[in-house]
Image 1 (cartoon, rainbow, N blue to C red):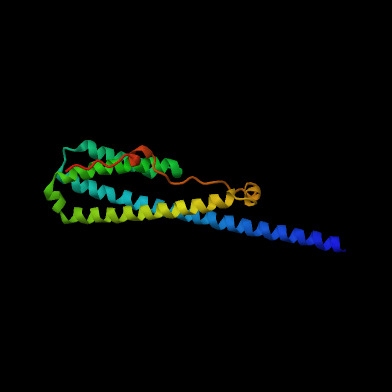
Image 2 (cartoon, helix red, strand yellow; image 1 turned 90 degrees about the vertical axis):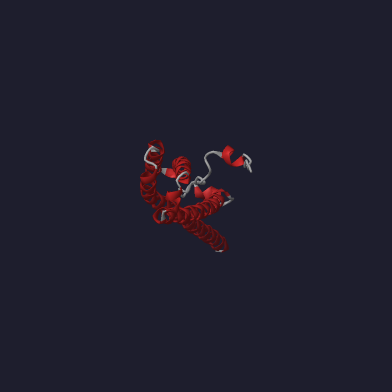
Length: 185
């Protein structure tokens, strides 16, 4: 009779462990999915602002068509990107195109003084801040999920329960951020 109680106790402990592990993994997976959704919402918001900014700049710099085409192509690539890695690559391309667009805008003092352009630029800055926050939240969720999946004894059960590691949202061109900033006066 004692052996039955011991076996029953072990089965109950294993069942509670599996239940808690599964629920913990599901919670972290949902948190990562939510964080990814936040990133896509902010990227969409930024992409929606860009046509307005491009149109504002076009009025002042119509001869800069190459810049406008690059921004439009980068925007399209970002909106069509699937998954974390593809989105990161497309976003890097998009940020480069935006830098070119704002470099063109710098050459036109009337444009920089235009209230509509200034408001759009401020909204873009606000959106960029939200994107950065969303990335940090996503990467924190991925870190927690990946850690829980990899630690013992969770690693034994996580694969059987269908949980896999997620990719971090990382900078595509690591060499660019590792290079020291060249400051000239």
